Amino acid sequence: MQAQIMRRMGLGIVVLAWTLVAALLPLSAAPYAAMVMDARNGEVIHARNHDTKLHPASLTKMMTLYLAFEAVKHGEVGLDTKFKVSRRATLAECVCLGLREGQRISLRHLIRAAALRSANDAAVVIAEGISGSVEAFADRMTRTARAMGMRNTTFKNPHGLTQAGHVSTARDMTILGRQLFFDYPQYFNIFSRRSDFAGVGNVPNTNRRFLDAYSGANGIKTGYTRAAGFNLTASAQRGSKHIIATMFGGSSTAARNARVAELLDMGFSRAKSRVAVRAPATPAYQGRDMLVASPRNGDDDPNAGAKTIRIVTAVRTSLRPRARPAPQLSEDMLVAVAEGVDVSISETAAELSLAELAPEALDVSPPPRPVADGDAAEIAETLDTTLAEAAGFTLAAPEDLAALSTDADIEALDAAATDQDAVDPVADATDTTEIAQVTDTSETLSLLATETQVESDPLPQPAVVAQNEGPAPDMLWTGAPESFLPAPIGTDIDLNAEPTVSTAPELPAETGIILTRSAVTDEELATAMVAERFAASEPQVISRVSTSDAGRLWGVSLGAFNSRHDAERSLITVRMAESQALASGISRIRQVKGRFEASFAGLTQSEADRACARLSARGMDCAVATP
Image (cartoon, rainbow, N blue to C red; front, side, top):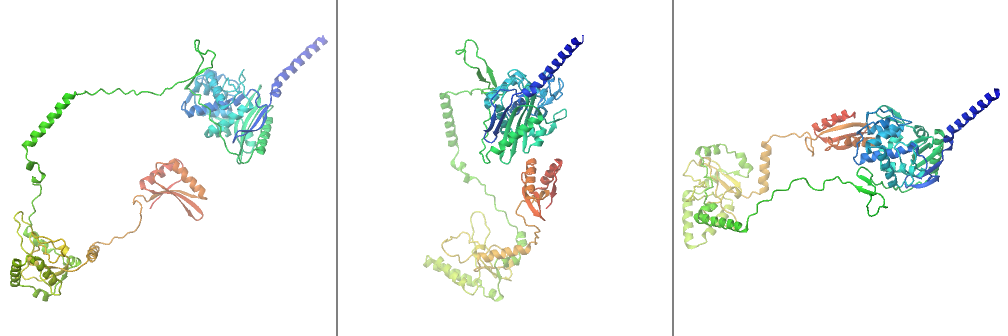
């Protein structure tokens, strides 16, 4: 009896031992593989079993996330697109986000859950949301891997749980990590976050211990299954060097992290300091417009590979209806119409005379406005002697008035001129010369005018000042240039001859003003007129001189900074945030007492107020600078 009991106890111990060995065997028997690569140019620094096909575990999610980024880039989905959680996603094994069937969650939160928490249910939702099913998404993952050069990788699911045929290598995973860094740098920082919000709560990063322990580490993904062991693809940058290392088959998290740290140290010690960066080529897009079809029976080459058919959804022809054709007239009808037009024009021209059609026959000139006697008296009363003096006239002395010629002298001169005209046909020129000589002498010759009557419309006549008409002149003005005196009407003017005698403008007889010619330059006349205008105007006080727009005197101050770099950075940030409100502003940095004040100038008051209000709404410091 006791012997039987002992045999049963021994059998139980043996079974328990084998059970423990079976449980611990995958942890220690997972094959080891490693690869160290210079991320700048793709040069392999260290490799061991790097082409051996192994289970990648959750390193698979790097390709799942790559396809999610690619789908966003090509417009298949958006980061805020909400995917519906299926029953298959809720049944995913191992680590999960805890999603419920029928729940809707955005792609942004699913990416964070898959990258940080390594949630398997989130990976399934991403696959079904982008490709419709897990199988279709896995097929797209494999096609993209081939386009990248991952020749030994085949994907069967988006999460990496152990499945027959789901394999990869240390080399291929290193290539995938480098491709993520260069193709989607805007998303690569997700892998370095210690935690983030994933829709249902904050999720921690499974790689946070290595990120905290290794200097320069910036990602990227961990993985673990019993068949694969503890895997890790890590990225680190120190100075100008950037190393990516991958390890398969670790026995524990601590052992894996220690070994990957050794691999990265090896890479930094062996990598060259100065290397030309050569980014890898982006793989061909394998999205929804790619359809893979198998050859059908009856094809010319039944043994040929699968055909790739590209579905083009762009509109090739315009949907706008065609315009209705215009009616076409026959040539005979066109000729008949042209002949009819010519005949109509000829008949119309015969009926109308050229005089009736000439524009000169139209009386379009308005009649001259008559000048009343009251207006002339008002002009005489308001005549300002100051303006005459500013124009270059001077007041004649009384003895000059007494020396003026009488009517008898004028009649004698006229008679002599008439006799001379009968003898000498060029008497006009001689008389003009003599009068010019007399005018240039010191004795003042009174200005004479002839009465001219035009048979057509009456025009204003020059004034004739004589002693027998009106009161005696009480003042005489001399010194005005000939440009102020019009030439006699009805006489021929020699453009080549020097002007000698001019007629005075019409003025009332009672003023007693006579204008004579004198040598006054245009510069002196202009100076006198400007001085008169300046004396008559009120002085204007200018308090501010500015060459810019008078309305753009406001600005927006962003505060003072400790360094010029900080001030410039603030200006760039604010201009990018409010490019429209500050489009016309001028960036300025002024150093005041060791600090640097950043501001925008050249704004209107409304632009400055609006820009400062928008910046305050964003939580930025600003103040309106008044002129």
